[in-house]
Image (cartoon, rainbow, N blue to C red; front, side, top):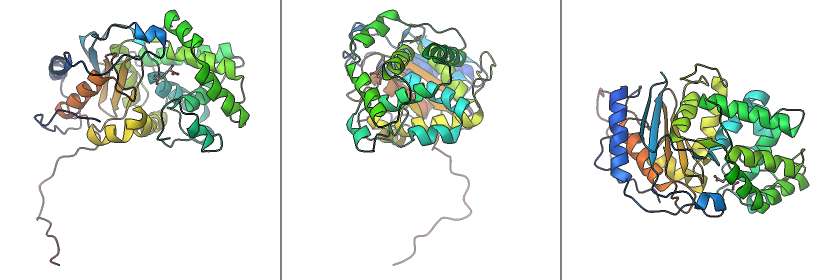
Length: 340
Ligand code: GLU
């Protein structure tokens, strides 16, 4: 459950991020509040992830002006994993358009774990959602390209443009995942059996695994997120990566399903569209303001970084990032409930 431990923090409401110095201070406070929290467990179903130091903890924020603040292990690289799904979805929607991707993949929450077979079986083979593994593999397969190599090249270039630097794969994670990838392959073959995957399942799982094995930092996630917060323009490099419409679509999708089957509760308590990954990263994006990236490997049972959730919950309140929060304006008169 999302205990947020934040009742002592005032709900700040604003239309802009606080100025850089204040953001840096809030990041330091968040880091200090939660760095000794040791709930959760490092993902171990992918052997390479089980080796990561559970003490690592970094937080980064990026504004739409490209102003960044880092605290703790914000520049330590880790596997992007499922966080890549949000950005690949954005790239594919940018290439194919809103309706094509919506019709082929769907946008509804499955309510089931990220690697569920049942979710596909219950919906006539529809992957339902681009943030679960089946939908993400199907989304990756839609990336334009004359060959799997070309598709991968386009995905790598697009994700690197989001980050504003050339991303590279972690070969150890990639090989470890490929050795233990039977379930993803089964999901891809199941989609194929329903006529929902036109490409070769093995090749598509290979590209999907590559995208999940990319090394990023919390700082990268903040810049990538801020690109989606600012209409698709990377605020650091000023490169236009995707359209504003694609940003809106992507944020809507991650709002409903970015935090695995805890997404509803996350949105209710914290109020920021976010995507997490089993590598320990979370990116939380407030449109028009900026984004926060966190990295801390121990995860809750759903697969969300525990310290990352707490840190973002704190920043949501303290920096006014909750997209649902508004301040009361002066009322003309008080509402009176009718007398019954
Ligand atoms: N590559 C991982 C998998 O397919 C990603 C899982 C995740 O981060 O949710 O299982």
